[in-house]
Amino acid sequence: MRSALLILAFFCLHTASAQNIPTPKEHFGFNIGDDYQLANYTQTEAYFRRLAAASDRVHLVEIGGTEEGRPQLMLIVSSPKNIRQLAHFKTISQRLAHAEGLTDQQAHELAAQGKAVVWIDGGLHATETVGTHQLIETAYQLISRKDPETMRILDNVIILLTHCNPDGQELVSNWYMREPKPEKRSLDNLPRLYEKYAGHDNNRDFFMLNLKETQNIGRQLFIEWLPQIMYNHHQAGPAGSVLAGPPYRDPFNYVFDPLIITSIDAVGAAMNNRLNVEGKPGYTQRSGSVFSTWYNGGLRTTTYFHNIIGLLTEIIGSPTPTTVPLVPGRLIPSGATPNPVTPQPWHFRQSIDYSVSLNYAVLDYAMRNRDELLFNIYKMGMNSIQRGQKDNWTLSPRRIAAIGQMYKDSSRRPADEEGSDTIPARYYDSVLKNPALRDPRGYIIPADQPDRATAVRFINALIHTGIVVHQSTASFAVEGRTYPAGSFIVRTDQAFRPHVLDMFEPQDHPNDFQYPGGPPVPPYDAAGWTLAYQMGVSFDRVQNGFEGPFRRLPYGEEQHMPGTLVVKGSPQGFVLDSRANQSFAVVNDLLQAGI
Ligand SMILES: [Zn+2]
Image (cartoon, rainbow, N blue to C red; front, side, top):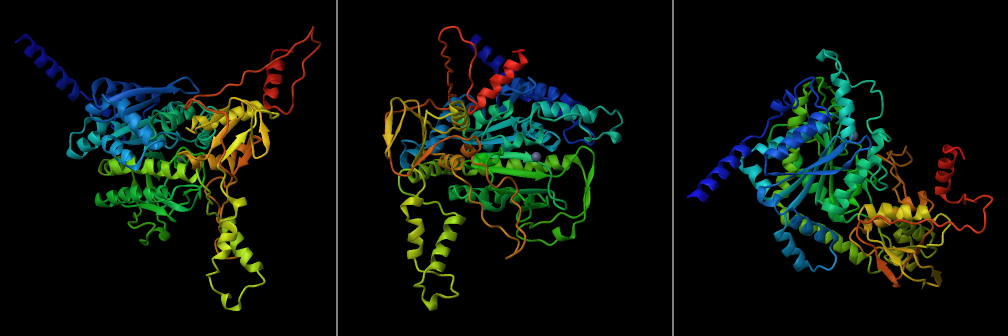
């Protein structure tokens, strides 16, 4: 009897707390999306903590501190049952993404047991205020709603709601709200950068991970969770649209697994479709916007090189009401914009509603395709491992141009082949079976290089995005060259091979012209960025399989290079090697100390 009472009491308490989810209006004093109202980070952090305290659908994680010292938060949202087994589901997600040591059968079994993991973020670019506000509203809806779709999503998906720039939200919202008269509020003339060091280019730091925020995010994305889908919210949509979303225009990067491209198509179709079902026009895709998947280094784009389906939307909207302008060229329905939006006034809340719909479209897709998403990230990883274990040639514009050139130069070219797009198959073999043009099986970074500290820094950039690195425990020889102990080895037979190739090899951007002989089509972002080159790291490519006395470094663990100082007798001074970048840091420290 007594225990029955206790259980009853517990049940009542539990039910009471489950019903006690504070609404945004109760917490912030306004609805998310009300005209002229922005929440700052102090208020948002307090709200996220209240949601976590009130609901068993939430596990709150502080993923690290920001550059200005604020805690950066991630809300993990799922069913209460899943929340109690997060470690289990995280392990499944990791094992499938790494793909190592699994058979297809085992991968299918793990996929059947696992939950889809979906990352949704907001606020990276703090002046794009829809970002953080849709994150708040989405959290509230996922945690409070009880409709069948929400319940099915919670049962099947682990949702990582991640705040990308707390400092920026605090700055931007306080700046906007400083003006008491709503109609006078404006985001213009912000007094400083909304990320302490990088400002807007906080979205160009995702393979280098220099900023605290990107380090925090990178750890969750590439080491901890490896979500199968990540959705990165931005602004603004092209004039005359409501938003630009996936799929994106060409070119995509030639190191990707093709499943990345077709999976972006599939999720993009689900997003666009849902808006049309809900009567929300104005989604533009492919040639309808400038966004592509070529670049590595953005929050969204670095994920492609890790077999994660990265989504970007750029949506219109502002707390100060705006309008959808008349852009005649956008009004003819096309494959890029199947459902054009017509000119009209536009309120913040509409952008919030669109964003919640888009998030639900992605989550609904993940719920319906849970095991397929989990299996497919394994498949991409295993494809990469297998490509790195045998001779492989990446199809890219320079290689294809070389085939054409070889044919053109051939004196034995038969006349009847003139003017045809088809050329004899032997020209393919002369390039794409040429052993000298094979993709490398791995890279060796010798320990005996002038700026070893920079080489270690480069290796750490790889390790922080989940790349497997080995280190030699003794000297060894490969293809006639001897390397000392302590050299680093990065093999290409690993799940994130696309990222390895991209950090070591030059990017081969296509010749993208508006018409033959016309001006070039500008790439959306950088066209080339090979990190090993940019950092001046010495390395050797190895095109044949190789082994050696190699120790696998612990996954995700930063490497340190202890310095050495040899002093004999009483020194008259010290010599710093000017070939080492760190020498300049030391000199600056010494100067600042008055030396
Ligand atoms: Zn942005």
